[in-house]
Length: 282
Ligand code: HXC
Image 1 (cartoon, rainbow, N blue to C red):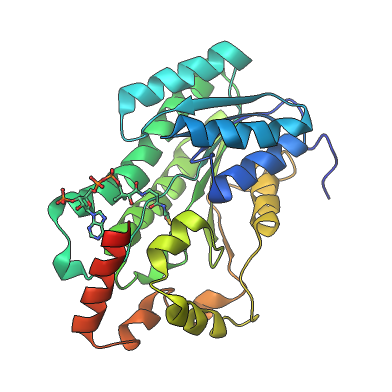
Image 2: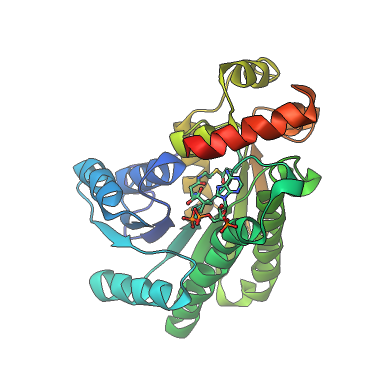
């Protein structure tokens, strides 16, 4: 379906683009003709990703930013416009998560996740949206949610609440900004193991094995599979798709919320200890 110029001339901002799924999205977009800006909190991680992605020959900008900071996000948007002239697409990929019994969460722990996932998505979306509206350009915004957006999720309460908010943001803006030609969609990924996510969501090898054995296809997802879906939704191949959430999980959600199985892996007090150990590991 794709050709080398599927995204030619598109300028795409990808949050959390230095690693994991974000860098896979950036890489595939650049391969198909886009100029990208990847942002994240650590400049060195961004530089390393940019060096890899640059092999496709298109421009790869980096910007170190904490998306919780509205003004800093504004400066990033201004920088991208200054460097590339305009922005066409935004991928709200940056996420934050950890396993915790909800009764053990501090207010700040809840806030940290919600601020990164939900407020960060708002900060980027609103300011890129303003740019699109002010310049009269159509655009495509893609939000990464989860399959437990609908079901809720045990031990990932802040993430479940924040991602449900992002899902609501997606549909709200899909309708509100449709007259401007701005499409807003989301992807709900299932098991796509990345270092950032799995180190925080898989306590040890036994949990990982139990989790993996339950997967209907007997395997996890591969980054290229989700990257192609992202490209499709961002591209002009999908001009009439907006307000849609595409699940890509090999059928995993049909067996129940993604991390609820953990509740049955050990007595509750043991689980709380396991989560505390994970927290110490960082
Ligand atoms: C309980 C925790 C905790 C843990 C931190 N906190 N880790 N509480 N269990 N494991 C608490 C801290 O004690 C503090 O509260 C508060 O959270 C903020 O922590 P900080 O370290 O000060 O915050 P910060 O440096 O901003 O780091 C944010 C973070 C961190 C969320 C805690 O993990 C992070 O930066 N994550 C980004 C990357 C990431 O998480 N990637 C995975 C995404 S996976 P107190 O009260 O002590 O001040 C994903 C996929 C979802 O999103 C779909 C599943 C497949």
